[in-house]
Amino acid sequence: MANIRIVTDSTSDIPEAVRKQYGIEMVPLKVHFGSETYYDAITIQPDQFYEKLAASSSLPTTSQPSPADFLDLYKRLTDEPDTEVISIHLSAALSGTYQSALLAKSLLDAEKPIAIIDSKSASYGIGLLAVEAAKAAQAGKSKDDILELLARIRKEMRIYFLVGTLEYLQKGGRIGKAAALFGSLLNIKPILTLDDDGEVSSVDKVRGHKKAVARIVELLKADFGDRLLNMTVAHASSPDVAAEFSEVLKANFNIAEMTFTDVGPVIGTHAGPGTVAAFARPVL
Image (cartoon, rainbow, N blue to C red; front, side, top):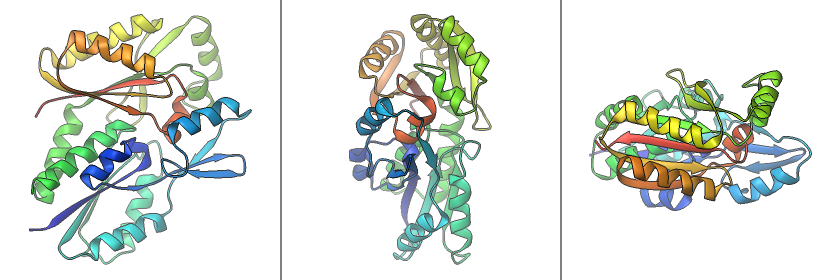
């Protein structure tokens, strides 16, 4: 029986303890504050990042891993006897990370058993896929079975998130300057998601955080009704907002498991502090 190894990148925002528990390999993206470069989730952690962000006079930038970063890891893993790799990454619509992984695969022997997956997602939308794939691998599932499971989860998962301010989306080119100013003045909260193409899109716009949370509840009710759900809440340096959000979700849904994670430095660069997100899927 083949040994299935799961690879992801740092934008999956999987807590380190969980990565270690399930043997998930992680390739970091980079965050640049001026001339200083940090490796996401390795040389800079979320708390450190948000402290530096608050003190910085300019927005940091991010960069994808190189093909060489993936090549070294893929070679090491596939050199192990009877080992196959499933590599799950940040939406290709948002980053060149997926393309770097594909290029690395192309530089290896064509017979090397590596499947590269565009999650069409971000943050724990990737993380959830990687963790469930790793659980399935530990349970002895085949690569084909795991790929089928991932397709099903990706189809059924729902993601809704709110940003603390529109400033970071505007600086990153996600919305126009006028729209950001208008939204901030009127306390407009866009309810955002990742669409089928893996791009950030707006589901609705409401005034005020509480109304936005209530609207997310309505959307999730329409998606899942009373089905039993696993839910993850992610936040960008906003544990109190995340805790309040989770209590609302617990009060309105049949939740089998509620977990929490931090929005890491790379995603946080583009979404900004104060972001909170719900990642929901029915129990399979």
